Length: 237
Image (cartoon, rainbow, N blue to C red; front, side):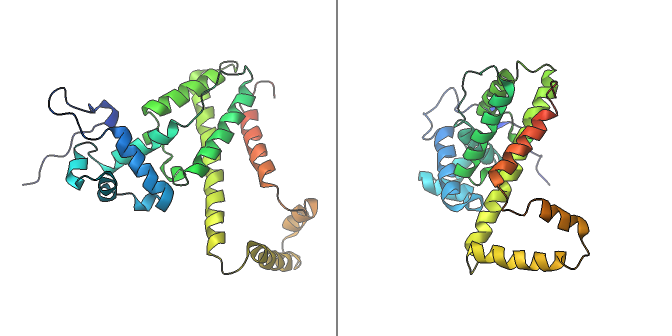
């Protein structure tokens, strides 16, 4: 006979320790820190309940008493690194504050390259995530509009940063795996692309390359992406 399905549960609603009995050997912060260390050093795929238990020096089954599911472990990790966000006094310039938020989030994802894989609304309401969202909404106080619209702005900003950093990390990983230098890779691909454009089959692409033949400034691309998204919410635009 099949057992009863587990009841839905949010890790933050679960008491960290019972009111009675011996004091737990580990805290959620201890467990999250161990998992983050593993992920930072070896990647998210290296994180398992068994591996985290070994890092802490306890049995795997003992760890389940603190963290019932691997998804809960991921949520603890996201919340732990979310605590690294600097929460400053809003400057009164909502655009400048949100650009600052974006750059800080980008730096955070580079410090923890596994983080973009776990960026999900599912993990969006942990204690540090709620503090981050409240901070962003405070930064957006000068912007007219409903809080629902402002939450959409924050979600879109996070989406841009996550996508951009994911591409940066993927490019860096691919570069490390190449049997030749990045400059050689660019030269090989540039020569191929130039040959295809020269056939005349892609006149619009040819025009695009003639408009901007220099190297792509990825920092400028990031700034333009942020600016264009914020323009969509700016009543002055």
